[in-house]
Amino acid sequence: MNSLDEFKQIVESYYKEHKRDLPWRKTDNSYHIVVSEIMLQQTQVPRVIEKYNEFIKTFPTWESLANASFAEVLEKWSGLGYNRRAKYLHQIAEKVVQEFNGILPDDPTILETFPGIGKATAASIVVYSFNKPIPFIETNVRRVFIHHFFKDKLPQGHPNGKFASRLARSREGIDDKELEPFVESSIDQTNPKEWYWSLMDYGTFLATQIENPNRKSKHYAKQSKFEGSVRKVRGEILRQLLKHKTLTEKQIDILDEDKIKVKAAINGLIQDRLIKKTKTDLIVLS
Image 1 (cartoon, rainbow, N blue to C red):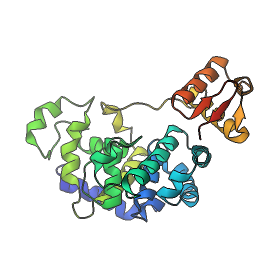
Image 2 (cartoon, rainbow, N blue to C red):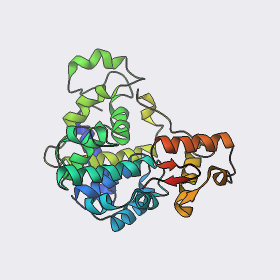
Image 3 (cartoon, rainbow, N blue to C red):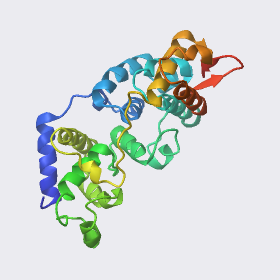
């Protein structure tokens, strides 16, 4: 890869031929975009599409989500996993309604103070909602830039030459800070959100074609196995509580799981404030 211009041509050419038709790309409604970004944090696109449409239909506005009980929100979220995200989304809606008069701020530094929103998600929300040219790095962005600029010898066409000698030693454990000059220099200043869409689609394509370049990243962490995990037990407990409204710990033990694992799942759910324990029962927080 000789230059950022050539790189951009490759990405844009792929996007032109293969861009995905996704519902959250058809709106500039910041609420809808926040819902999609929180859902997409740790869940693949096909699973998100169905849940996103159902969720938006049930809770079409910040106000409708803020006014719902957490149990109602969790019921619509069920099946996506990582249920803390449902709690965060509910809290975000309450914050937007109560502190910002129902209008999402367009400043990523403000959004970073919201529950469950880190630096990358805050920037992506502002890019997709307000079409502002803000650099951010997430899984697909990281995959694309590492693949094209960090796979061989010293990267060519680097926007900032002073990084060259350090980059030559960074084939493994690549820090996102080393990618930032590439990402920032590549952004389309006129229509940044579509540039990021092209990166997302091209990154998804690369994931099916090559060994994962993100393994070279300092920030790479392999997702833990779901089957047999405490995470799976947590989801099952929440499903049962949503169905029965209240259960004792002894009734939860009907799960075909190790009792120690069940206890760990219950304690984790209580600690995350997704459920609470009364003297006798467990219930989902309202």
